Length: 347
Image (cartoon, rainbow, N blue to C red; front, side, top):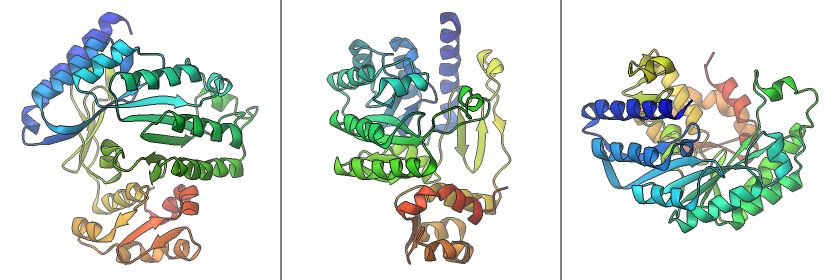
């Protein structure tokens, strides 16, 4: 996409922001998130102008969490200073690893030193809330190299870490190479996850969601909206919204670029689907499901719907079930997808 296309896209997005303002005039906006790519590839004046448009069109609270994703080496201190002055107050940096060989295998353009430099520049620019993304299960990665990346991230004083296992998706270069890749085995990947929980806790970063760790008070307020089944408005091509029980997105990129911001709607969730999704996302959280909140939302007791289904996993030590809450144990988190696929009714 050339510079003219980029500017045209931003004009379309600004128009969409303005067009949505009246429909959401009664809403208080307490989180804003620029992501799903690398927003910092935009010139800083364009990125900051998009945030200015949001401030002008929506009722953004004074204490709102305003995040942008950022890849190392895509910004300098002047860029970050402009972002901070524009109102961004949280930066999510895609480190992935602090070993250059692992980054090269992932096809990343940055080095470990690029990440360190970006984190330090962000701090100098005034960002006090910095998150870093890490991956484990990378080809050639060991428990020791992953632990070193974790400790190196912590040494930089970040407030939040997201740690994700590498998934080999069909249609990717890794999928074509999957039989020749030197991937850690499943037991080693599980050990890496447990190492992440322990090492990050040693440095004051506590797990609050299956893949996310934060210092107390620095949990991602925006992402918690997803995990707590809250509403959110997506703006821009391919951005998804969940408002009033309806899901929609702008999935025709070509039409979007031509200014035809017509949403594509999914069918409304049935009551059973809504319950299952609430449980699916809620059990990702360390605190799990609040049974009183479930009953208030759906008019049914959590135990009446899920108690019998979860009972075998409670007995096996994968799930902790009490009178007020239900949550995964640490070993339950390791096999959470398997458990959820058995317990829930999704096809």
